[in-house]
Length: 193
Image 1 (cartoon, rainbow, N blue to C red):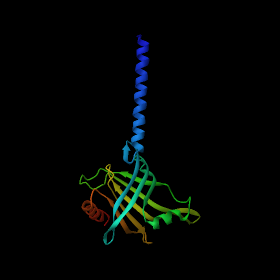
Image 2: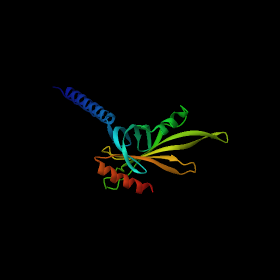
Image 3: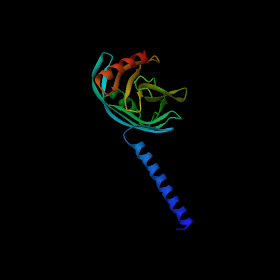
Image 4: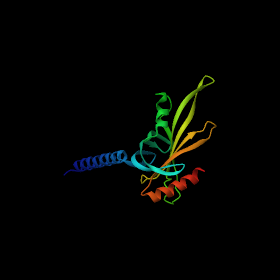
């Protein structure tokens, strides 16, 4: 076999291997879960979570987080939906086409205690109000989601009290068991107090 044929075969093998590697990364990124690769990522989670209101645990609710991430720009493009949270759904649908579809996403170092704080996602129902002839954003509802690569997360839902501060509405915890969920809920309350 000539040298040219060997080089051609080697190049073809390298191209096929590179294409397979790229295809594998794309398939992995689009699969369910939290997948962050360099500056880019994809989140696709649907989980039944423990529900806590201001009086303590009060059942379960399903949460869906779906979208793409750019960690360098700190952007999440997608949706976060909570089963039964009609307040935020109504707010987002009040003026179709108004508002935003980009939300903040922050990578953290984590504290190593098992609490899901590798990433923080801010998702909000933002509407625009006209002030002095210009459209100004006004956030009425907010979801703060702390998550880790394992898919564990805590979602804290808040509502604008009208004076610029936010009031706790409920917290959802996706943990391995009820005891861990209660512990993480207690930690989340300390972090937001």
